Image 1 (cartoon, one colour):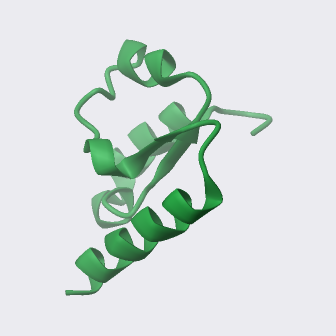
Image 2 (spheres, rainbow, N blue to C red):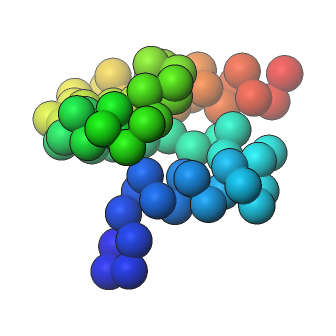
Length: 70
């Protein structure tokens, strides 16, 4: 993203729209960046590290969506 990174967007969502922040899923090639930004409390099932297999991504997103719909 040109003006902010995903961690900054998530931080803003936590402040302004916490219900939406609960629906964020991270896809990153640099997991240490999230931890260095203080986002290590993000549930592990919401973090995907590149490269990720498409089938695994689909499975975990479906489980996440189903969990949030319940």
